[in-house]
Amino acid sequence: MTISQISDDQGELWASLRLRTQARIGLGRAGSALPTRHRLELQAAHAAARDAVHSPFDPDAVAARLTGTPVVRVRSAAPDRTTYLQRPDLGRRLNPVDRAHLPTGEWDVVFVVADGLSSRAVHEHAAAVIRATTALLPAGTRVAPVVLAEQARVALGDDVAHAMGATAVVLLVGERPGMSAADSLGAYLTHRPRPGVTTDADRNCLSNIRPPLGLAYETAATKLVALLGRARELGASGVVLKDRSGEEAGVERLP
Picture 1 (cartoon, one colour):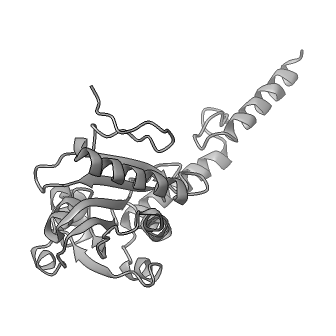
Picture 2 (picture 1 turned 120 degrees about the horizontal axis):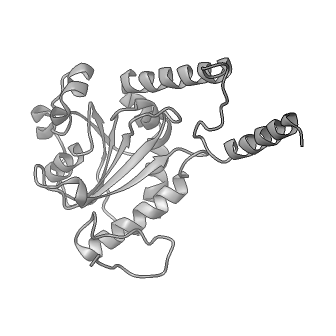
C-alpha cells in the first residue's frame, strides 16, 4: 500500500466520522495551521456564539408564537446586558416592581422563558417546546400564564414560581453557546422551589433542545411531562428524581 493510498483511506475514515458528530475532528493542517476553510468555519462559529450572547431578547416574537396563550413579561434585577453578564446574582432575582404585578393562583406549573445566554435559542425553540408540553399534560392540569423574562438566569424561575404560587416551574433558557451550537435551549424543572434556598441539585435539566441536530420538541415534551408527574408523586425534583420516560419502572429514590 502506497503512502497516497494510506492518506486516502485516512481521509475517508475522518470524513465518515465527521458525519456522526458536530465536534471538529480530523481537520488536517496546512503547514503548522488549520486549513483555511476550517479556520474560517471556526471564526464564523465564534462570531455566531458572540452574537447569540449579545443579541437582545424579543418577547414579542415569542408571544406571537404562543397565540392564545396568556403571557406576562418580567425583568430580572439586572438593568442591562452588561450588568447581567457581570453580575450573575442579579439575573437570578426578579425586579421588585415586576414581582408585584405577577398574577397569583393555585397553579400546578408555570413555564418561564428566559433569554439566558442565547436569545436566538429562545426565539427559535421555546414556544414550540411549550406547545408540545402543554398538549401532553394530563387533563385538569392548572397551567399559569407563561412568563417571559428578560436578563434572566435559571434561578429566576424560583422567584417567579414562589411569587405566583406555582407548585412547579419549567424554565426554558438559552444555553451558553459553544463552537458547534449557538441556538441550544435548556429546560430546567424544579418542584416547589424556594428562592435563595433551592440549589442546582434540586433541579432536573434537559439540554440541547434544538431539532434536527439536538433533542426534538416532542421528545423534550414527553420527558418534561413524565418528570413533572414523578416530581409530584415524589414531592421533590433534582438528584432524587430519575428520568425514566423511556422505561416502565416507577419512581425511585437514589440510594
